[in-house]
Image (cartoon, rainbow, N blue to C red; front, side, top):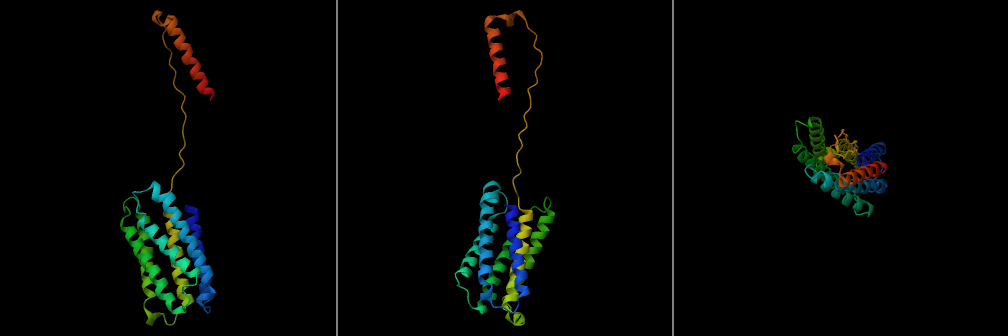
Length: 217
């Protein structure tokens, strides 16, 4: 799931770049692409939570991943269903999405072990603060009048793409378990008359056959 998560982050980042390259377009021109990318990200994050952290790493701070995934998935579905058609609503709706995502990342960073995962803590906290600030930026109307809706959307998507890539890089994952087979050490056994009874001989022969059978398997 790490690879899929990183790829989904790259997709969102490229969507942001695409918005930057077409600042004069309306939101409706990008609605399908944006909605599709968000749905894909929401599904991948949900699967990552279930398959990776949710089942095998319950002690890790993973609740924010599921929350962010469900919000992204729901907003993506709304976009695909043409429920967001007014350009004036985009800064508020997407700003709230990015703001919540940033707050969740800051909360997640506060639970990371600073001694064992210092770099992970710093990156998560930094991206969380930047994401929160960009989310708030969408609510400050006097400062965004010089920005088109598409450019503002590009900022949101670009920042979220960075967040997802950082998440994928630091996402805990299971390592393959390699089973090592060791041959049993056989030591010489001194045979005494007590071992030469018919029962003991038959028992030793049976054990020898079982060992040979096990080695053939």
